[in-house]
Image (cartoon, rainbow, N blue to C red; front, side, top):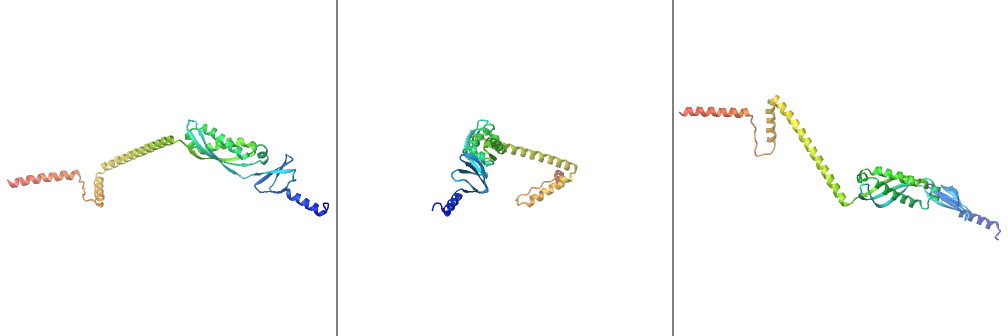
Length: 259
């Protein structure tokens, strides 16, 4: 019965099914035969010799890894806590399996050491104001270390930077002082510009005295348009002198009449 064709067919079918494997479009299978590398299989359906061959599946998609918050010291001796996010992808499945035991963990460890080294070469102002350039520097350092493992680092970003509270207060005071300085400069510039305009207006009025009377009439109109209980009317000095002369003349005439 063991030699019957049906049994042999079933045995071959079971062996064939046991060796069938499927790799998705974004996966590659690194195949080993008796411990020796045999090559890469996939994507799609492939077959392994049961017992004698096995495979390690590698994901080729971009992986986003968040590096735990690390406390480090800047070039100007300020302690900071930094969180970094790393984007990387496997470009060589064989190297990622043969050259390193755990490629994901290895990338994270390299990112940690690179973070400390890069932050230590820059001041606090650089860390706060030029995070994009620091991310590029870290990407180059990490990518150089992971290239032998068949890993390509595509992007590194600093997600969060924490500084001591005492430093935050000092920076807030500095920012407030700068804002006050800018406000005073703007006010002084406005006053200077206004004085120059007033000087120009005075020159025009001196050349055209009638313009002063028009300006007075305009001011009276503006004051009258508002809801004020008291209205002050500005009269030219010539009118005042003329009124004074008339008053003196009238007083003399009255005195003569009484005598």
